[in-house]
Length: 585
Image (tube, rainbow, N blue to C red; front, side, top):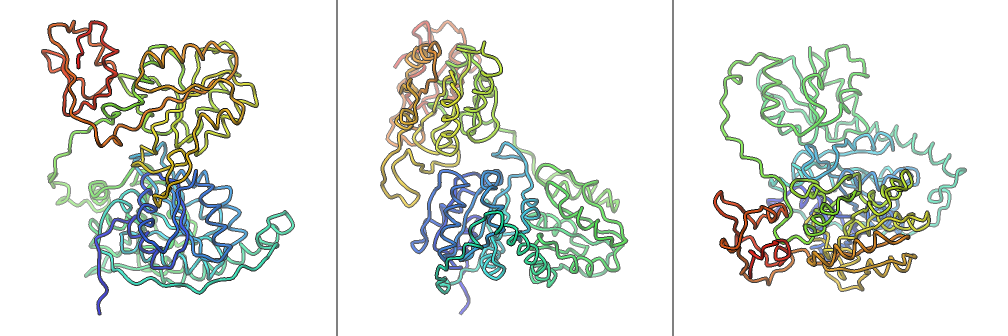
């Protein structure tokens, strides 16, 4: 009987692979492009799945479950591995109980990230295996394989995805779930307690394991060679999503696809290189493969980043340009673009977004605003353009303290903004640091009751879990009071004048203040009715002030100002904007 098939995204396929491999526990913090891995896993009743407050905690939860003997998957986006790096590096020393797989999804081109970062170097630094699937089928199979490697070599295993793999669909064979044998917990202090004396022993174990992993990589089990008809003395070496581009553009040349890139399968590469005059290494971002292959001393020409940029996402067009340069392919050079590029759509806060009034006031008051990661980061763009910094999750709260210590004259002119989910992720410790070191700034928690930017995932302040179980709500204002903040205020984000007055009062106080600006994300309000707001053309003075609010529903068509009732969410904030009373309900 043939196995059934499904058309799955890479994220769905990774979840399927975890289920088929018998995973019992999964944890993550939502982050594009990895979010749907845990959302998909949560649909399987056999797997306990949770959103953790951040990636470090998710990996620590996963480690505990692994030590107890369960197979565990932990997922995150590329920058999430930075947050989880502390336990990750030491887990290389301790090893695992049940198989532990860490999936990270990179975001070349920064579709939804603050940086481009090549996490393959984490695998090299930690001396851990790294698997790179090139489509959804491999995403499932490599995830399953990773659990067997984890248990065979007693170590966490990394699986790399990218935005294209995570969100593209391809056919996947669906197989039955395997229930692995239960591993009983055995107390082993020298393995799991990393005091220096034990750590030194485990470091040697890591080095010994690396030699065995290298032998496995050299076996070629996770490598394949595409061999075209005819012969060519130019060989292509690639991995992951880059293989898909290479396979289409360089179809007349042999292509070595590496499924494991840490350790590098040097014997496989050496064998492939025989008879070639040129090896072209195709990889997104850093020259991770290229540098190591050049260091092998193969005695032939090896090219890569002199043709391909170390940034951005690759495309068929880019590879065709490289092919033209190398081979002088006149036919491809004259090809016309088959598809006209779509006009870019600039990102913008939704109509009725509860963040917009806050940043409108911050700009009006001419304050320095230390920012953070979330939908509200879009306030850096016109017409709001009111954010001064955005570094990483939770950084704004710490930056504000540093700025005021460097210049006490900024008292009353400095605030930080942080979303509710980000506050739980990494803002609490920064707030405690502010209290401890006598900060006098204002921290604004933008509480829209959800993790909005990544698609409305729950967090500790929502009152439900990933599995949609009801739990107690952790209120940011209660937490702030509990850790010692004396000046704590809660305001309605839609109350423009009320927020401005509250902020002005808190800026004058000597100590630290926390303002929780609360209003549900507008996309959660499914029962809202069609807007009845409009602009009276007779009363309108055409001052343009309403446009400076930046709401997409407020428009100017060249003749008059108007409100698009299909976009308007009836938040009512614009009623406070107009000085002439031209906006009416």
